[in-house]
Image (cartoon, rainbow, N blue to C red; front, side):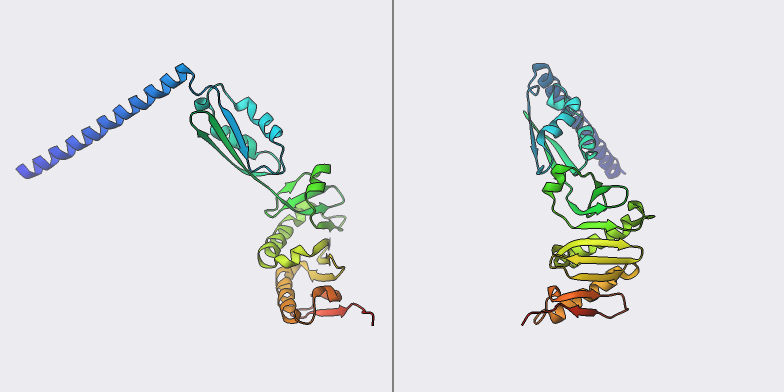
Length: 251
């Protein structure tokens, strides 16, 4: 019985000690914070922005200045992050304080993977299916394959999921195909691919990934004697078959 009471007393004393220590630390930190603000130790600070290769630094600064207060300690970091992540071409933002005089902002940009050409508009798409605006600067910065939707009744929204799945597949599983891709045309269930060497490839939207896997295996099989550029066209639309027509060669 005495042992139990002694043990209980030790636990209570330990809890009181930890509680008192927490209060002391809080008061200490609060006092330093109050003193620093009253002395203006964190009022004048630098903003360092990194990771933005495409987006102009001045544009980023103009977006965050309304959220910048007089003190580094009073800046609302989540508010700045949310503001910047709402901008086109920005995928993610990390905002942090480096005391006493620096606000760090690291930008992760989006990269267009296709230029979408539809009856309604022209717009970029990144690998996650996010649509990005097009202007003279972006056209000159991102030389990507052109995808045309030739279905007059079709819209970008109708094809976005299929195009995103196609992009993610070729970028991860078949990057050489994307590297040599110049143009894509979609008309109903038929997808036509045009390589940089003018080889035309036909596939069905319904079995697109499977047919591109067949093409990838076919390319591995013939790569010692043939390249895809040696063919005028390659037709993948017949199940588990690759139908080809070779280009005419001189000599």
